[in-house]
Structures are given as C-alpha cells and as structure tokens.
View 1 (tube, rainbow, N blue to C red):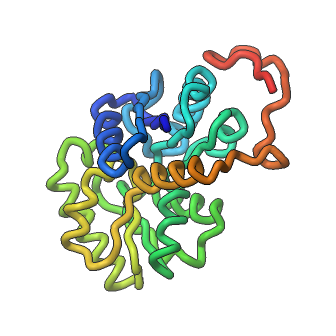
View 2: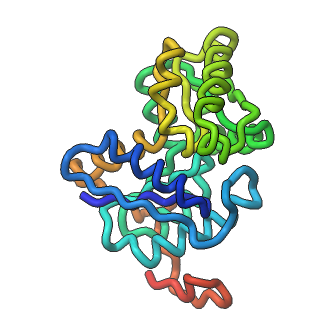
Length: 244
C-alpha cells in the first residue's frame, strides 16, 4: 500500500524526518511519500498558521491522493481533518486523533507533552473535539518551539523528559503523547527516561491506516464525511471547483 504523509509547514528537513520516522515502523510493502507544504509557515504554532496548513492539505489531496491508499495529516492539531476526509478519495488520519486512540488501548489516563505554552489552548480544544477529555490527565508544555525539535534534538529530549516525568508523577499520566509531528524521531530517547509508554502520532497513523487497508474499511459517506456538493469555488488557488 502507499501512504501520503503531509507536512503542514514549509520546512523540508522536517518532512524528511517525519518520513524516516514513518518508515521505521511501517511494515514491508508499505510505501510512504512525504509532501512539504507549498506555502504557509515554516512551523505551525497558532491558529492563524493552521489555516494555511489546511489549504495546503486540501490542495495536495485534490492533486495527488488518487495515487495513494491513505493520507496522514502530520500536524498534532489535526487541522482540517474533517474537510480533508470529505475531499479525499482514501481514508485520512490525523496524528493527534491516532495517538489518542492508540493511547486509550494501553493506558486509562494519558498526557500530551508539547511545545510552547501558546499551543495549550489549541490542544485542549483538540481533546474536546475528539471527545476524550475524561482520558486526558493533562497537557504539559515546554519552552521548545517546533523548529527547536528539529534543530536542537538533545535539548528537546531533556525538556520533553522533564515535562513527561512531571506528568507521570504529578498528573497521574500512564502514557505520554508527543504533541508535535517533529518530536517523533525523539521517541526512543524519551522512552528510556520515562517508565510509561511514549507514543508518536505519526507511527500511530501509519499503523491505523495499514489496519484500515487490511480490513477493507473506507471513509463513510453517509453523513459527516459526505463529498462536497459540486459548486464553483471562486478565487481559491489550487482548488477551483469541487466535483462530487
């Protein structure tokens, strides 16, 4: 099977790291191709930047998804998840939802450990959106920016370990979710210092899509994820009209 991995930002090095992380855990026969956003921000850390990511995701899905068996939205905010599912001809999985669902199978309570403090309200909204407030022990932030995870991996591991240990000791977390797509390659180092499962959403998305493919499950078109109605989209670069 073939999976499309969409990086929400314009940083090519991060796309390469995400692709390597996905391929580390993909089974033989699963091909993964990463796509860097053609426009938008160099990293996504606020709602404003997420809006550009959504448009990039939709454009790439519109142009390329027919050649794949599944799509990974590799941004922990799951931006545009429902819109992407409406448009995509193949299943779409966001890395936040994937990691939360996977965590629920190995822990009663889990914590998200993420980047700078300004993203905490976004993560809180995301947990509510996915209906998993009762399973979330806490959301812990760090001084790290998204790009710090790429540029300073040793510092990133130290900060993530400190916040993760606090989540376990003080919040009752039984698993740690890495709250940024750029943190995935750090999972092994963090796990060595934290005595609970450490979960990367990119890997979870790969495994969920492999399972959906094996089971022959497709996105339901009955209600929430019906295809968009045919109509003209004036002035929308890269999308134009939408056909059902």
